[in-house]
Length: 138
Image 1 (cartoon, rainbow, N blue to C red):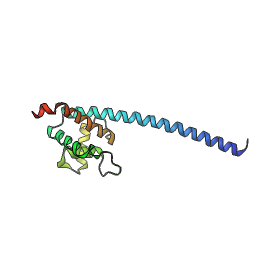
Image 2: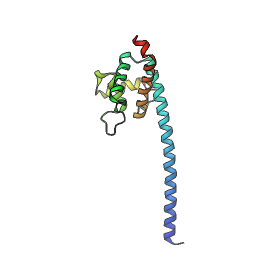
Image 3: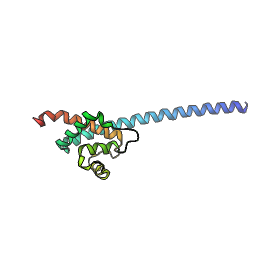
């Protein structure tokens, strides 16, 4: 066997190994995203049900309707989705990262408040608000 054949064979093996790694990591990401989605939604509903004030949920709904999904997960955004969520519900603290962090330390069951979790937390809160809104306001 020539060195050229060995090189081609090892390159082929390397490509196959990388394909296996890529597929494994894709599966891992899908599972992680699903976990954050489910946990975020459940936590958001729980927050809306037991801790949120009506005005906070109204602000959230208004932002959702006017900002088309609050512009979450923008590349290069100045604030994380979790911070944006907090600034929407508590505009008196807009820009105050420490206040946002304190909020999430108290309400987030899932400690990693990444953008995906925060987005689905907001969806869960909106789901709960829409379930009760008419009864609350009338």
